[in-house]
Length: 268
Image (tube, rainbow, N blue to C red; front, top):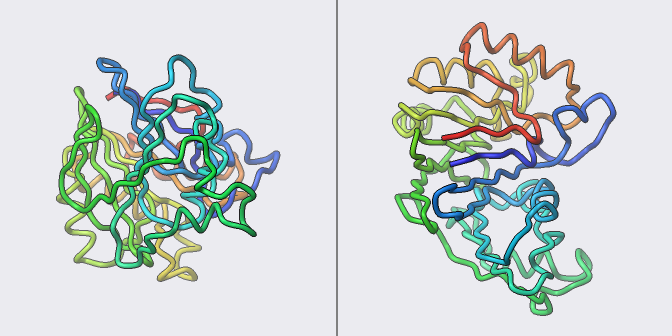
């Protein structure tokens, strides 16, 4: 399984010259099963636009697995080329959360937010609801669990031939109930993508926002037998210099740490 980052920021795709090295798009990952050719997309932030533009070959199934419905995880969806290109079969796997509006997709395509109503899309995506537990998406085996985030969000563990990926963005550490279950969920994974939106100095002013800091992420990885940690959901506008410094500081706690950047890829 190949994993590629297309969007690594949180909140808003605010592009600045000092931050462009890591990329300024919001969350989107592409997973490819190199044996079957199956693909699975995680989240539909603005990084989805570049992913769609980069797809080539014969049109095929395009499953997009969402973690939750906050705007930074959806804002690329209306601009996905495969919604307008004949032959493609986009499919949305949408989590059932404590705050879940069934007509969310109609809303984001509806005037005054977007000019093309969802019923006029050439390839209107089919929506399947997913719950916590284990399910298959093509050749991918996925297990989901709930995170500590306002309105709810799901973490996903995806099985790979050489190890598992855990995608656990938008989680705030500090709730023993959630943190203990997440520790059981991630233990032994080869790679984990974790929300490190804030620094330890910033997190105190943002309690209850549903995000974490890099130190909490690195301490969590060190305690739970993780192969590698990818810091993710970077604060918009945080510079490349700051992210490099954060990465080096985090490596003092957990050596196998990287700050995710657009274009980064790993093999599992």
